[in-house]
Length: 182
Ligand code: IMP
Ligand code: MG
Image 1: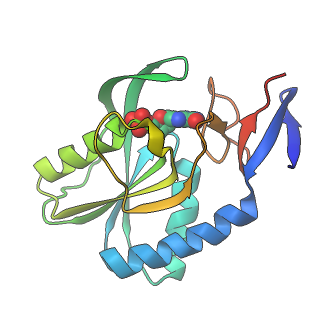
Image 2 (image 1 turned 30 degrees about the vertical axis):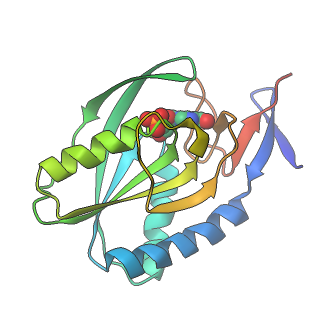
């Protein structure tokens, strides 16, 4: 397994930059086929910002002309455990009435964050909401939720990089990795 050192910590590579780029092209083709060419794409901040930036460019390659929005959601967590409460830190500025929406998030774990976003957008009048997540930790669901598009199933480990952080660190890594415990 390949690894790098950053901030004095060893980071094991779980999904390389090449694997992520290949999968993004496949996801974009799936989204074009199932949602069509004019979705409103909403990236859930902060963790999805790099995935969203790459996926949106892959969507261009798949012939999709999306509008792009950002929603900041915070699920309160003590350390690495989610407590359940989700709050809106930054709302979108677009009227979603009648829109076909693709929600983008980094990780689907308990499902609370993305289920909250989907329910909110449906309540505001969206005509459909599809969910696209880079990583799915399927054993960890607290609410019933399945994403329509999944990059990779993820082992039950705390991952960093490609936008995802632990304690505000490691978002800049161009791959998804795990901090080695040493
Ligand atoms: P949930 O599905 O509501 O439990 O929350 C998923 C969110 O928790 C993700 O969008 C991430 O922001 C965060 N999260 C869950 N697992 C990890 C991880 O392994 N590394 C970094 N963030 C994580
Ligand atoms: Mg998140």
